[in-house]
Image (cartoon, rainbow, N blue to C red; front, side, top):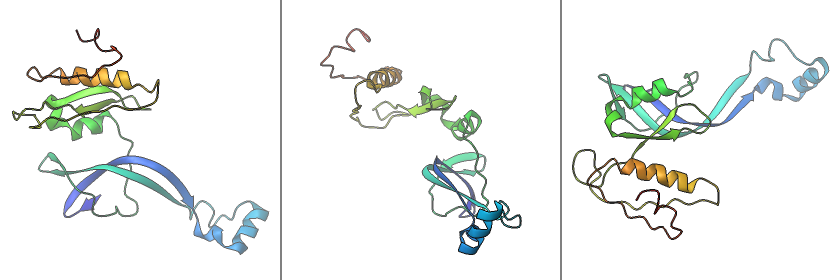
Length: 176
Protein backbone atom coordinates (compact mmCIF):
# COMPACT_ATOMS: atom_id res chain seq x y z
CA UNK A 1 0.00 0.00 0.00
CA UNK A 2 1.05 3.63 -0.42
CA UNK A 3 1.77 5.97 2.52
CA UNK A 4 3.81 9.18 2.82
CA UNK A 5 5.05 8.88 -0.75
CA UNK A 6 6.42 5.36 -0.24
CA UNK A 7 5.39 1.83 -1.06
CA UNK A 8 4.88 0.00 2.24
CA UNK A 9 4.49 -3.66 3.08
CA UNK A 10 2.68 -4.63 6.28
CA UNK A 11 3.29 -8.06 7.74
CA UNK A 12 0.84 -9.61 10.12
CA UNK A 13 -1.55 -12.40 10.92
CA UNK A 14 -5.05 -12.50 9.52
CA UNK A 15 -7.28 -13.28 12.48
CA UNK A 16 -10.70 -13.16 10.86
CA UNK A 17 -12.26 -13.13 7.39
CA UNK A 18 -15.85 -11.99 7.03
CA UNK A 19 -18.23 -11.83 4.08
CA UNK A 20 -20.93 -9.20 4.16
CA UNK A 21 -23.60 -8.08 1.73
CA UNK A 22 -25.58 -5.07 2.93
CA UNK A 23 -28.37 -5.82 0.45
CA UNK A 24 -29.03 -9.23 1.98
CA UNK A 25 -29.40 -7.66 5.43
CA UNK A 26 -32.66 -5.97 4.45
CA UNK A 27 -35.67 -7.90 5.89
CA UNK A 28 -37.52 -7.91 2.53
CA UNK A 29 -34.49 -9.29 0.67
CA UNK A 30 -33.95 -11.88 3.39
CA UNK A 31 -37.47 -13.18 2.77
CA UNK A 32 -36.89 -13.37 -1.00
CA UNK A 33 -33.54 -15.13 -0.53
CA UNK A 34 -35.14 -17.57 1.92
CA UNK A 35 -37.78 -18.46 -0.71
CA UNK A 36 -35.60 -18.50 -3.84
CA UNK A 37 -32.22 -19.37 -2.37
CA UNK A 38 -30.52 -16.49 -4.17
CA UNK A 39 -31.16 -13.23 -5.99
CA UNK A 40 -28.77 -13.07 -8.94
CA UNK A 41 -28.30 -9.29 -9.20
CA UNK A 42 -27.08 -9.05 -5.60
CA UNK A 43 -26.17 -12.50 -4.29
CA UNK A 44 -22.39 -13.06 -4.63
CA UNK A 45 -21.92 -10.05 -6.95
CA UNK A 46 -22.39 -7.50 -4.16
CA UNK A 47 -20.54 -9.49 -1.50
CA UNK A 48 -17.75 -7.72 0.35
CA UNK A 49 -14.95 -9.76 1.88
CA UNK A 50 -13.21 -8.16 4.85
CA UNK A 51 -10.14 -9.40 6.65
CA UNK A 52 -8.96 -8.39 10.11
CA UNK A 53 -5.22 -8.46 10.50
CA UNK A 54 -2.93 -7.93 13.46
CA UNK A 55 0.04 -5.96 12.13
CA UNK A 56 3.42 -7.19 13.38
CA UNK A 57 5.77 -5.04 11.28
CA UNK A 58 5.84 -2.58 8.40
CA UNK A 59 8.61 -2.12 5.84
CA UNK A 60 9.21 0.43 3.10
CA UNK A 61 11.28 -0.01 -0.02
CA UNK A 62 13.39 3.00 -0.96
CA UNK A 63 16.32 2.99 -3.43
CA UNK A 64 16.29 -0.84 -3.55
CA UNK A 65 16.73 -0.97 0.22
CA UNK A 66 14.21 -2.32 2.72
CA UNK A 67 13.76 -0.17 5.83
CA UNK A 68 11.53 -0.55 8.90
CA UNK A 69 8.57 1.84 8.81
CA UNK A 70 5.41 2.75 10.72
CA UNK A 71 1.79 1.78 10.14
CA UNK A 72 0.04 5.14 9.92
CA UNK A 73 -2.66 4.73 7.27
CA UNK A 74 -5.23 2.01 6.75
CA UNK A 75 -4.61 0.51 3.28
CA UNK A 76 -7.22 1.43 0.68
CA UNK A 77 -9.97 -0.94 -0.43
CA UNK A 78 -8.67 -3.47 -2.91
CA UNK A 79 -5.13 -3.58 -1.55
CA UNK A 80 -3.61 -6.94 -2.46
CA UNK A 81 -2.88 -9.47 0.26
CA UNK A 82 -0.25 -12.13 -0.33
CA UNK A 83 0.57 -15.24 1.61
CA UNK A 84 3.96 -14.81 3.24
CA UNK A 85 6.69 -17.15 1.97
CA UNK A 86 10.47 -17.63 1.85
CA UNK A 87 10.82 -15.40 -1.22
CA UNK A 88 9.24 -12.41 0.54
CA UNK A 89 11.13 -13.17 3.76
CA UNK A 90 14.49 -13.31 1.98
CA UNK A 91 13.79 -10.07 0.10
CA UNK A 92 12.90 -8.22 3.31
CA UNK A 93 15.89 -9.55 5.24
CA UNK A 94 18.51 -9.58 2.45
CA UNK A 95 20.63 -6.89 4.16
CA UNK A 96 20.66 -8.81 7.46
CA UNK A 97 21.47 -12.40 6.38
CA UNK A 98 24.77 -12.52 8.29
CA UNK A 99 22.99 -11.51 11.52
CA UNK A 100 20.12 -14.01 11.42
CA UNK A 101 19.73 -17.30 13.22
CA UNK A 102 17.03 -19.67 12.00
CA UNK A 103 15.23 -21.19 14.94
CA UNK A 104 13.12 -23.68 13.00
CA UNK A 105 9.98 -23.63 10.89
CA UNK A 106 7.23 -21.08 11.42
CA UNK A 107 4.13 -22.74 12.89
CA UNK A 108 1.88 -24.19 10.21
CA UNK A 109 4.24 -23.34 7.33
CA UNK A 110 7.29 -24.70 5.59
CA UNK A 111 9.55 -21.66 5.84
CA UNK A 112 12.27 -20.93 8.35
CA UNK A 113 11.75 -18.58 11.29
CA UNK A 114 14.56 -16.00 11.43
CA UNK A 115 15.61 -14.42 14.71
CA UNK A 116 18.17 -11.86 15.74
CA UNK A 117 20.14 -13.34 18.61
CA UNK A 118 22.72 -10.58 18.95
CA UNK A 119 25.70 -10.60 21.27
CA UNK A 120 25.67 -8.15 24.15
CA UNK A 121 28.84 -6.26 23.25
CA UNK A 122 29.17 -2.83 21.65
CA UNK A 123 30.84 -4.25 18.51
CA UNK A 124 29.15 -4.67 15.13
CA UNK A 125 25.83 -6.58 15.30
CA UNK A 126 25.74 -6.27 19.11
CA UNK A 127 23.08 -4.69 21.28
CA UNK A 128 25.52 -3.02 23.67
CA UNK A 129 24.02 -4.37 26.88
CA UNK A 130 22.87 -7.65 28.38
CA UNK A 131 19.32 -8.95 28.46
CA UNK A 132 17.63 -11.52 30.65
CA UNK A 133 15.46 -14.09 28.94
CA UNK A 134 12.73 -16.15 30.55
CA UNK A 135 10.93 -18.98 28.78
CA UNK A 136 7.64 -19.90 30.40
CA UNK A 137 4.93 -22.42 29.58
CA UNK A 138 3.15 -25.50 30.78
CA UNK A 139 4.73 -28.95 30.86
CA UNK A 140 5.33 -30.33 27.37
CA UNK A 141 4.97 -26.97 25.60
CA UNK A 142 8.53 -27.00 24.22
CA UNK A 143 10.33 -24.69 26.65
CA UNK A 144 13.47 -26.84 26.80
CA UNK A 145 13.63 -27.26 23.03
CA UNK A 146 13.27 -23.50 22.54
CA UNK A 147 15.91 -22.80 25.20
CA UNK A 148 18.38 -25.20 23.54
CA UNK A 149 17.81 -23.64 20.13
CA UNK A 150 18.28 -20.11 21.48
CA UNK A 151 21.41 -21.08 23.40
CA UNK A 152 22.78 -22.60 20.19
CA UNK A 153 22.10 -19.28 18.44
CA UNK A 154 23.87 -17.28 21.13
CA UNK A 155 26.84 -19.68 21.15
CA UNK A 156 27.75 -18.39 17.66
CA UNK A 157 29.18 -15.32 19.42
CA UNK A 158 32.63 -16.40 20.65
CA UNK A 159 33.16 -13.65 23.22
CA UNK A 160 29.77 -13.98 24.89
CA UNK A 161 29.26 -15.75 28.19
CA UNK A 162 25.98 -17.48 28.96
CA UNK A 163 24.80 -18.17 32.50
CA UNK A 164 22.00 -20.74 32.77
CA UNK A 165 20.00 -21.39 35.94
CA UNK A 166 19.32 -25.12 35.65
CA UNK A 167 17.81 -26.52 38.86
CA UNK A 168 16.79 -29.79 37.18
CA UNK A 169 20.22 -30.43 35.63
CA UNK A 170 18.67 -30.74 32.19
CA UNK A 171 21.25 -28.61 30.37
CA UNK A 172 24.36 -29.70 32.29
CA UNK A 173 25.06 -32.63 29.95
CA UNK A 174 23.81 -30.94 26.76
CA UNK A 175 26.39 -28.14 26.59
CA UNK A 176 29.35 -29.45 28.59
